[in-house]
Length: 441
Image 1 (cartoon, rainbow, N blue to C red):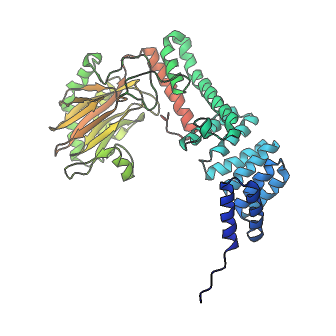
Image 2: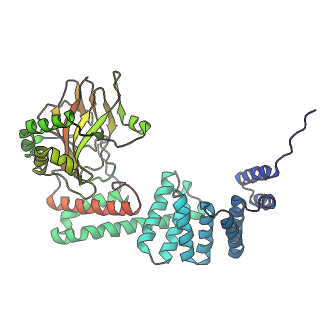
Image 3: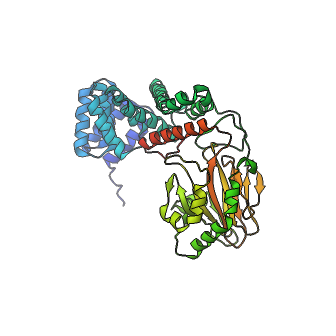
């Protein structure tokens, strides 16, 4: 005769709380949590829930007693720290609130509600720059998780506060970036930077993206009112001749790199094979590989590589590369291995264009931009707008190499180039303060 196991009261009560909360039975869940604490006096979830109920009754002292008890038992629990921050916020102790909320976020940075409350505390403490970062990251983190996209994805009790945070973040970033542009407005005149102002408004979501070619979609910054085209005629770039005249010298240095002990790196710079597979595909039994030998990347100069290839470095110095701190120039030998297909993708901004100087081009290699196919010819430059969807392939059994560099879109004026430089640097600095990539949208 078998004996049924005795039900575990703790597990039963936790399951009851889960079911009751799903059904919106708050009073029943509260009762179950109090019973749970009779068995597990330091249960963090039960203490946090009961504290939340006390806070809803405006009984902050009792909520604080429960949370201090939870904190003693679970000093690193982000939910406890978050709720402590909420209690202190409700009681007007903004310094303590900020301290607890920052501690919660250090452990659980995706807690967007904690970040929203941190914004409130920092604003009340008279720290507007820190409040701006907190509000912006609260909204961004929530939307990355499918929340706060509209009223339907925002809890009714939070809607006005979320809208306030959005407006605060938009206005604060607008002031920050406007300040970066103001010296150039004074120098060139406001009318000269009209298109830059529109680009900023589009970036901030204050102006809708214009109706543009569906093949084109910048990931970071769209510059309006310039001609939109996948490939650009070579007569727009008189410096192509300088590059092309140096083809033999550049190729000689490339061959020395390929033959020597110089280490190439993955262009994508990712260690996750699954992530690499989303960008590259191999064929004919070849593993996909897109390697790079950088002279400049994200605005940083690779001094050793430039010294190893002095003639290539000299010709790069002789052409008008985009120079934006932490962003540009980008210049490299792009090494596409046999059978590799770079899958369709888009670039970050149409303010700059990409030029290829083909150095080693086997048959059956090509570049496709906006649905238009271009077959590289060794020593003949091609320039294109990489915000159009583009891809490249090497279907041959040999390696393909081009020299890649970026230059300004020739349809931007000198004033606009200067303004875009200052604007992108300001956006990058703000993103860095939020611990985001410099060219995050």
